[in-house]
Amino acid sequence: MSSQELQNARPLSPHLSIYKPIPTMMMSIVHRITGIALYFGTLLIAWWLFAAASGEAYFEWVNGIMGSLIGRLILFGYTWALMHHMIGGIKHLFWDVGLGLEKETSTRLAYMSLIGSVILTILIWVVGYMVR
Image (cartoon, rainbow, N blue to C red; front, side, top):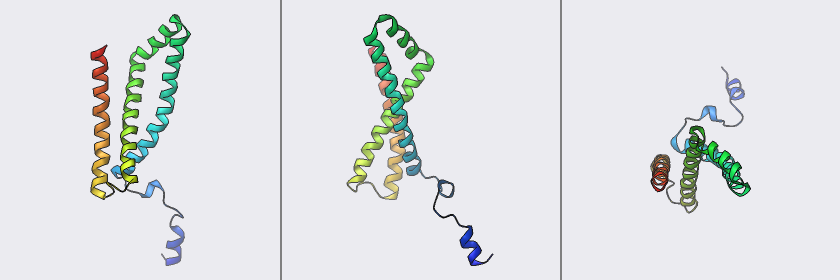
């Protein structure tokens, strides 16, 4: 293959299919996805609050949906998305001031943000059930 043919076969700009997935890249993608999930989860919380203000019958109906297995799984996912997004935001604050930008440190922080979000989510739900 000639040099000109090789140059023409290359992509014009980088895209995800040519990058090797690394922890910091994956956590960046998950951070964006959790941001979108938080939008829809917040709509569910607003719906629940609206139901609480609307009357007992409507609130009981919405509360029944939120208290079902599927509703609790959605709320658990919302809690995890909130914790993961919060930890990712704190990590970005550190990066904004120039801390933790080394390859090993940023990779460690990526794993820690995933583990930390899972631990915080479980703790929140355990405390919630204990208080209940």
